[in-house]
Length: 398
Ligand SMILES: *Cc1c(COP(=O)(O)O)cnc(C)c1O
Image (cartoon, rainbow, N blue to C red):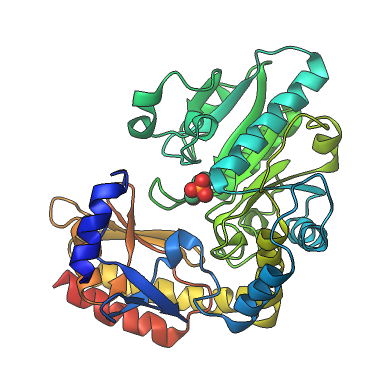
């Protein structure tokens, strides 16, 4: 069967929740992907900020293969060495005390919200607590995560969601202050908004949020599902700001392709929130998934992934800034580390049409929000990869 025939068959049986690009990807190597016809694509998407290590990393692959032959799954009634090792590594990397492993980002958000509600309930016994979330935020597609997602387009048809959620304007501290009251138990935000259009938090904004939380006994939940795990140049983006959350959510690059997420918290939150019987998961943190986490942390160290992000970021920023000044349909650039976006004047050209044309020219890119083309390359890219990306992107612009 041809690639086109396979795609047509897929369209008959897959639920049509995505308007997929018309290619079927077959394998990956380093920063390149190959479709079923063997066509090569330079990947500046990483499966949406997932494959930080690039494809076909031998030591990562071997670690997974080894664990497959040993033990895949046990349930959380028992301990496993990979889970304990992964818990030690991620709590240390995040500067947090305790972790709960999940199967996805959305599930990590569900757990974080439950922990915050239970914490508030433990403190005062009432059940009418409020959570402040933000405009243009994205936290996932399950009901709880959707309820704190600030894009009405994703939410409307599924209302009513989880109650007592209020939305403030991102990077507008007054809009937050207006909503804070005695019932507020948590503020949830992405340290760098991803899907909403690559908006890093202003330093004064996130610091002020931390202060408001401290003064009012409110928990700060930072969603680092997209911007965490080294993408900003530090292990977690909040470390760029010198701000520490009470709860943090992680997923995407945490398993680099094996579906796994986590929410982490301080000892103070743990002691006063989720207790035996309050939360659970059948698969979450199983020996296979946590072996992936361990392999990811090992490779981060071995390949000095953080050092590479710090080294490459200024180069990528410079090249993107050059594009912005060269093309009249580009109006600016935003981002932190290897999470970057260029903003379009959509009356002249749309990021959607460019993303499509980029694929034709062997470059994988995705959009963010309505007017942003998003760059989420593997964290191991070189300057030569950035140069090649620019060559292919210019062809797509033409
Ligand atoms: C992707 C993403 C999620 C949801 O993660 P899933 O694994 O798709 O459920 C939540 N928050 C942010 C910031 C994300 O980028």
